Amino acid sequence: MSTQSNTPVAGVQKMTPSEAFVETLVANGVTEMFGIMGSAFMDAMDIFAPAGIRLIPVVHEQGAGHMADGYARVSGRHGVVIGQNGPGISNCVTAIAAAYWAHSPVVIVTPEAGTMGIGLGGFQEGNQLPMFQEFTKYQGHVTHPARMAEYTARCFDRALSEMGPTQLNIPRDYFYGEIKAEIPKPQRLDRGAGGERTLNEAAELLATAKFPVIISGGGVVMADAVEECKALAERLGAPVVNSYLHNDSFPASHPLWCGPLGYQGSKAAMKLISQADVVVALGTRLGPFGTLPQHGMDYWPKDAKIIQIDADNKMLGLVKKITVGICGDAKAAAVALQQRLEGKTLACDASKDERAGKIQAEKAAWEKELDEWTHERDSFSLDMIEEQKSEGNYLHPRQVLRELEKAMPEDVMVSTDIGNINSVANSYLRFEKPRSFFAPMSWGNCGYALPTIIGAKVAAPHRPAISYAGDGAWGMSMSEIMTCVRHDIPVTAVVFHNRQWGAEKKNQVDFYNRRFVAGELDNQSFAGIAKAMGAEGIVVDKLEDVGPALKKAVDMQMNEGKTTIVEIMCTRELGDPFRRDALSKPVRFLDKYKDYV
Image (cartoon, rainbow, N blue to C red):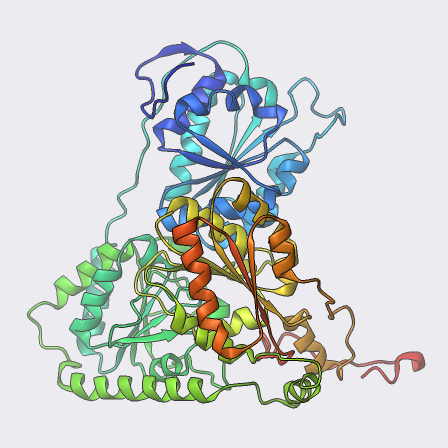
């Protein structure tokens, strides 16, 4: 058996298409892939090991896609997922959609039915390109075995240049044969700061701004631009708010940090941005869900001048009306703006101290409110709290989230699923460094958190990895605990056990007079299931045990290599709905349904 090599062959050489495929992976620095083995790509898989590539087998291909997403978001490198043609590939669609909205450079390799059988309805045959066309930045279909390296390289290049998933579709018979090929060198884009005119216009706006505010978005994380964002914020004395679900885009300990906008975000951030006369949207598309009214506040500043900076020109002005749009890299643009402000007297210079006081006051008021917001106060939640007093000891989710926040280790990575308690967690999750927070973004799919944090742990084994999930979403993904145990990838999973599909049940409370259909969950012990899978399990039903349980689980993760499920028994109270405009009050015209209003 030959020795492992992470250096691709040079020059034009005779090789098989499988060798061309694998050598192109090597050229792009691939060392890990996620998926389930299959006959469709077995000829290539046979030489992964001598090429220095580890294929990590998963329980379900959706998990593999999420793992590739988490791997890419932590490392800044490609995440790669592969599976058997047909069902193995269709299982990945949801995960690739989530990666698309997270702007993750995931490459999904989709072997398909052989060219001599396509169209005959053979075993595991399907047209795999349409499945992913809405959720990929580029789709490469290998049209001839001799073009294997070319298409493979292009998919890897495009995933990084377009910042999103790409698909490499390969007829399974094209792995075989004899070709002459040269392995392409990776092409990496140098984006630059943007156009001179728009940068100058933005600098002029900032020079006249009296209350500038910066939104630090996912582009700041992807461009490794946190320090440059900090420098610009400090020059302006500007409060910095995180874009939705990008709480890791600015350090929470910084005096100018104000927390996230959007659903279950920071009231301090919302109150401060509402006063802005100029907003710098740095590396954010200003997505609808991250700028919608919240906490009863329609906080988006209607008269402010908006400077939007995004690497994708199609995002400029798409959601919010803007004054200046800069198509550029977040880091380079922040540096260019600061250079243009150097040595100038700015309109906001005179009010720096006053604005700093206002920032601190708003943050202090929000922290005090969070401390005192021990439980939800709507009538349904109060009824549930009272009802459950006789059932046993159940904890208030907000108090649990606060205790988890206090117990978080340094350098932590956290993934959250979709759902009611996970969404409330947005108010409590704070980070000191980028590439630390992962959520399913605009796709909002359940079953995201656990596999994503597994992929993150593979990319950064030295960092503590914690996932949050409600019991509904947990049921979709918990089988991947077996992946952790089988392949020594230790993580810590916090499961909020409240026996309901909380986010949707909230709609039945608000719009359907508490007529609950399909929202209740009668669960087994998740800690017990974890132990049956070979992991550890801790049940928590006392508030004083929340922090110690998390610390113990993280200690076992980092020092003993053990995966632990922390099962927290929560009340059935419910936080605010995702959107108050998402549903309408029911109207019934038929007599048999007249009471269902």
